[in-house]
Every structure is written in structure tokens, then in C-alpha cells.
Image 1 (cartoon, rainbow, N blue to C red):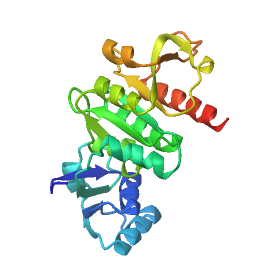
Image 2 (cartoon, rainbow, N blue to C red):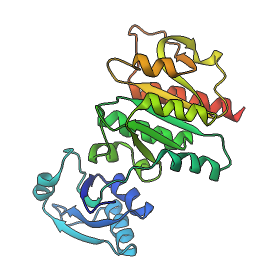
Image 3 (cartoon, one colour):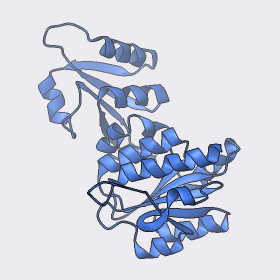
Length: 249
């Protein structure tokens, strides 16, 4: 890891970074206009004290100047840059839990809110990690950290040069893959148990042709509404928890 720092914002995101033991240089907290201490802020500062993290009170205008998201909730932390995992780390996490690997792969997600929400879903669904491409996709940043609601501190994210090649390698290790696409088989009719990778495509163009051809199955989500698609992070959540349901069975 290098010494570059990034900013994370929001009470929950900063609290989870503290709880996870991530290296935090300092925390800035906006001074309350009425001089009172918010109970949530009090808990956060108590935790920071336990972790020996420096806390400084500043005007809200000062925090506004640092903010990258515009939604800092009066709390900003300067932390070590998020370190990407290796794919081998994700597989090792599955082995450590004695579980068949469950990995979410993202084929060109560009919206940091979607990436953050998907990392949050991955954590809650018990996925062992998330894989993203190094280029032409969003990486780990302040918006991703805040939207993940702290999951970024616990769920490993690997960045790879080529998603299709990564799928080929993981298939040789015994995994199989399902991607989301409207033209596929209804997800309820697929066997989604075992060592599985769930592939979610770009917000506009979906899963690329080459990546789709590498997948063993194409899953569609039955829908009855008047529009024809779900947000990428919502689609990921629906399919991820169908995998959870089947693995429990």
C-alpha cells in the first residue's frame, strides 16, 4: 500500500472504518451551531479515542470545502488509500470459511453509487469478494465508500486487467458463471448452487459480448412492470439473494 490518502464522508462510513481498524490519520467533525453534542457523534468520537485517532472540530464550511460528495453529515475522515485485493485472496476467504466460492464480477460499472451498493450487497449476501476491471470502470473512491455503508472495509475488491480472461482462469479452478441479461433463462429455473460467479454488466450496454460468451448461464429476472430493466445494483441484489436462497436449500 502506498501513502496516498483519500477522504471518506458520512457518519456510518467513518464509524465502520473505525470499527474495522483501517488506518485513519484524522477525523474532522463539524461544530454544532447550538454547541450541543449529538449522541451519534459522541459515540463516534468515543470510538476514535479508543482507537487513538485524532479528532478535530471545524466549521461546517471547512468540511464543505473538503467534501467530495456534498453529503458529509458533519463528519470527514482522512484514511489510507483502499488497497485492492488479489483474486487469490478472495478464493482464500472462501476456503477459510469452508464454503464454495461466491464472487461478484462487474463488467464495466461506471457509477460509483452502483459500485458502492454492489459491495454492500456482496457483503450482506455472503459473497467472498468483488472483481472489477482496472480500466473503463469506476474504482474505489469516497462515493463508493460512503454508498457501501462500510462494507468496503470488509469485502475484498480485486481489480483485474481483463474480466473475460479472469473468468477463464476461475473456470479452470472449478467455478462456473452466470450473467444477468434480459434474454436469458428465468433465474428461478437455474441451478445457482456451488462455486459460482455472478456477472453484472455496464449500466447502459449490459454484459459485453465476449464476457457473456464466457458465462455458463444467462439469467433473467422476471418482471411485470412497464419499463424493461432494473438498475445494475438492484439487479445484482435480486440475483445475489436468489443465489443465497438456493445455497441455503
